[in-house]
Length: 347
Ligand code: NAP
Ligand code: ZN
Image (cartoon, rainbow, N blue to C red):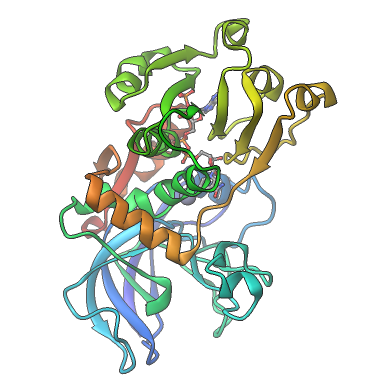
């Protein structure tokens, strides 16, 4: 066992606080690593504050983190000591179902094992995530990181990156596609970068007009302030794809009206309240609403390699552990440019 320093939520209402626990020893197929940087995803906040229903406390959040390999099990071939390594939203899955065998572990028919707020598959021990300084994971559920990118700026790729890359690929975004990204936060700004790298014309739909300059600097050709009444009227039937990364409840109707024929709105953000929409909004133009959940192991590695080849990273504000609670409040207030990342040497 390895003594590990972390920050944990002890209840839904309290603040995160310093916490220590023992990480399990390595099995033969495991890799042990020092966590260097861990991103703060809005999902961490939804879960630590129990916005999605029952949560397991103490909860050590964190499901997008990178580090340096310190030890490997006897059967490990993918990593060696000193390698860069990344971990995302799941640490295991059934490995046998149709989806796991097809590299869609995020849709494991038994349900994947979450990196935190879950129980480890073998040990049934509570899984503690990446707001900590040491991690153990089966090698096949960890990722190789490009050598040319900054470590802190890569951490968010493991969730915000793959979650936005995957639907852009699935819906075949390429040169000439008209893509709108709703919500310019941690996920949204990665969506903008990826869509532009794939050749799309990108419009940002944001309720924070102060973000327009950044959106255009990322390469967006247009910026719509969704805080303005009737913002959608000038954009009817415009977009082939809308990625909705907004963490709060939205009235989808105005967004649907801006979809072109056969256009799709992809639900990525996970507010607590259900969406509602009129049938007519879908019938007109054969529009659809779909969802997309992170990405599987092969596609996550593909995304990381794509980032290495195209010099794509997240815009990050690196913080020390004692700033996590302020970072949560600022994230909820849409006041982060564009992802908080914890320097895990400060635990
Ligand atoms: P984030 O950094 O907080 O970004 C969310 C953005 O939503 C904000 O920057 C803001 O953009 C917009 N927003 C927030 N409150 C709003 C409001 N009241 N009205 C209108 N717009 C509002 O969060 P994130 O980490 O990117 O995560 C976004 C969502 O995706 C969360 O719900 C998270 O749980 C979910 N998520 C889903 C997956 C998946 O696999 N599907 C994976 C990871 C995260 P503007 O300031 O530009 O308006
Ligand atoms: Zn996440």
